Length: 241
Ligand SMILES: [Zn+2]
Image 1 (cartoon, rainbow, N blue to C red):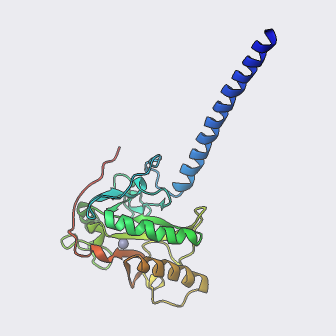
Image 2 (image 1 turned 90 degrees about the vertical axis):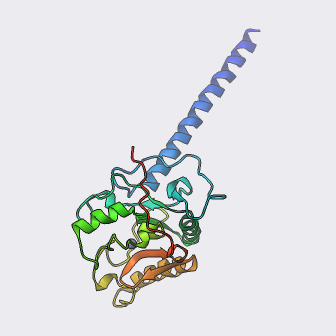
Image 3 (image 1 turned 90 degrees about the horizontal axis):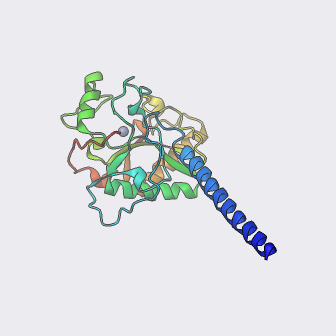
């Protein structure tokens, strides 16, 4: 009888201890994953990605979505939510990446192609409310660097993104210049660059084009979704905590 009680107690203790260990392990894995996704993020970036990802199925193509709710495979370094940009000013209250549903769908597909090759997309900027475009124009009222807010840009339509590639572990992939470097070195048709940089830019451009985006000659990081060109400029604003 006594022996049975002892066996029962031992089994119970083992079960309880085992469960606590596995919860601890899961917590640790989640922390590591969150850290790796947001490693390059701005300080104000919301930390935790949605635990359970949502589905884009059934949503209107022109609706706005927060990309991190639909994929945890992207990296974010949203520069305009910091002062680390050519304006030297923070123009977003918090770092978020929103796009239209059709843009999000194309980005997720393009990213899947990059993942197969050992890379993932890192965002510098996504949808930009028209009022933020006015803020930027006030700081730099020069159409060479900032789109005139009266006309707006495809960023204001939720169809443009500024991106680069990083490795699966989040390491930098050399594109020759930083984001928002204005000069010949950032041009797609500047072939006077080391071969590995040309190869990285080519991979980015060809893959993005395959999934419905087009590039502009002077900025290797900027991509427009062709299907968004005729959408309206809007001023939808996301909430910050
Ligand atoms: Zn851009």
